[in-house]
Length: 86
Image (cartoon, rainbow, N blue to C red; front, side, top):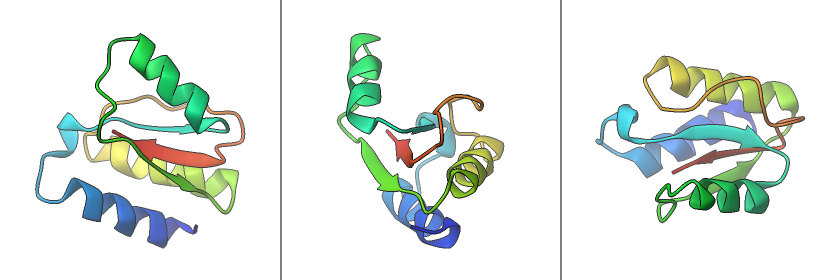
């Protein structure tokens, strides 16, 4: 998916809730990353993921939502093949 499609999908998922209660990240291996978050005792029941068209798309989407107050950090995720939120 492209930048606009993923941003729209995330905004639909988040709805009117505060961005600060959500976590965003990028990864090449979403199932492994989800398990890692679960192992860290994080609640991933609201997990969603989207396949990115490119690493740039993934990193740009992540930065956009980090700048809006979502939890997470930049820098990881390999080639950022997926963006995820929970």
